[in-house]
Amino acid sequence: MDLLDIFSDADDVQNVPAGEVILSEGQAGDCMYVVLEGELLISLNDKELDRAGPGQIIGEMALINSDKRSASISTLTDCKMVKIDQKSFSSLLKHVPEFSLHVMTVLTNRLQRAYDMIED
Image 1 (cartoon, rainbow, N blue to C red):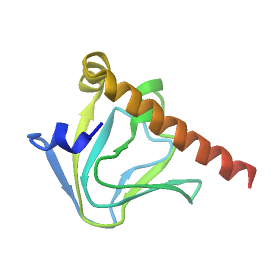
Image 2 (image 1 turned 135 degrees about the vertical axis):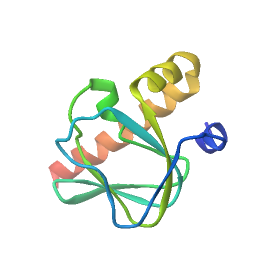
Image 3 (image 1 turned 120 degrees about the vertical axis):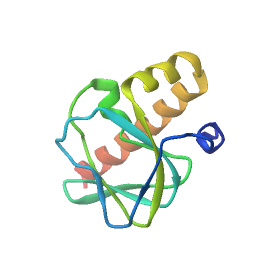
Image 4 (image 1 turned 135 degrees about the horizontal axis):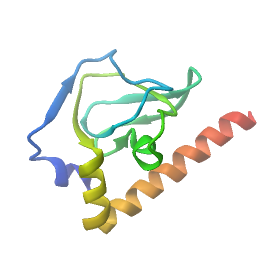
């Protein structure tokens, strides 16, 4: 699934400079983002968990379990992102089956990395 194609014409693109914290561990989560440009660092307990770039999603876990953020995310470069609120997220899951599979794959990969960090 190419999220860049789906969100390339979005009206609510946000430009975020390098060095900004987008999401913080423990913060309430009410949205996620699709990365259009740039690179972001995903960290857990101040350790690098993953990086996200164009066509990837960040912040999805809090929308699924309506809980607090499980990781912090900051921009490594200037970024362009599309914000997706809970209503839009639910609509995408309902109407775009490939999006649901994409989110599950991302979750599985990130949870595995977090588990591997704990084991180290």
